[in-house]
Image 1: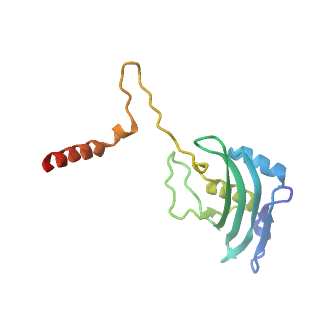
Image 2: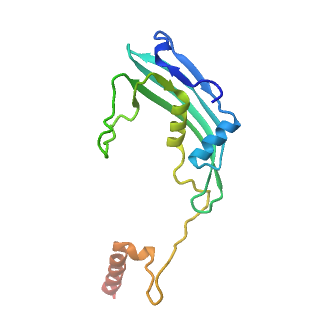
Length: 181
């Protein structure tokens, strides 16, 4: 970001909110798009405020707005998505995550972060954008067809063959037809 986006916690006023409004320029958006595997990041705005929660903790309340272009998971054609979402995080003094184990259980409350010496709103913006991106963007009308593969001389297994109740339904239909005769 062209301006400083990391607020030093010790310098934040306790009695009023500190407002911010980030609008990355085209080169900053291009760098974010590349880092996130996007085809394009057309617009990005992150605006909100930091406010005190008690004597030591802080809350970030903001809105993220973005227009992203990603490849369709089926056709690879460009898919444009508009993201407009609220972002709320609490920075808690003394909160620490145990990183000594290989597997860490995620807390139920994913809106709390440990409070450090600085709160970087550009970092929060990038994380929020990553969380709200569509995982499987699909162009309208794009349909994933059935792919059938098998070795020579082997009958290929189709999607329908993997459905265990399909055979039972066919058997039921046969039995119903025999009972009507």
